[in-house]
Picture 1 (cartoon, rainbow, N blue to C red):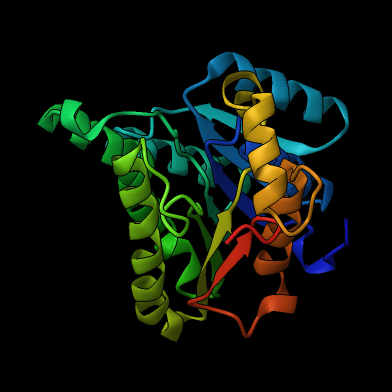
Picture 2: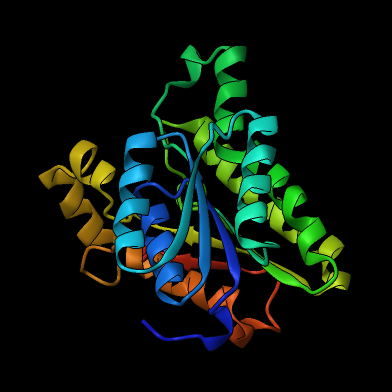
Length: 250
């Protein structure tokens, strides 16, 4: 990966950082010399990642947090702040693409899915604003091509991920006067362990190869590379944008 000297020593917060794309983000920023705090409810995976990176001499902190609970999220942000100092990069990564049928959705399930996939992105952004408003910063929110490609079978997930784009556009306008940049990354089918174990059948892989312009399987590091750029000073003139990393699917 490219090296961005300005990321060295910066405090970075990644939500949902224990596994998948999140773990790749944590590792990528840590390897830049950033001080990386990450929040996740998967305690076992989070502890393992922190121990592995600490053993390499990286500055990382795992805070167990269920991001559906906003007070717990705020407490997690404060723990990272107390440990590493003011947060200047936030990556709103946490999500869960649980499949569901529209006819089976209850009001309770609707609220839980929005809490899981969207609500925390706003409140995490709100929580770091006080750190960034005096010196600028970068907020990166994760969307998904599921809404762009018109995927079925998970309407609440696709609705939440499309809402992310609206949030980014609005926060970019509101936070811009403070030199805070807000952008979105929209991944395609990224081959995390979850995807490999649950969804990558031979038939699905053949469909992926047909739909993508690039024929290789995309990896979490493909997303992390873009996040590093958007967080760095090299992207200092970029805000309110959505960058698609899908190998040419949509």
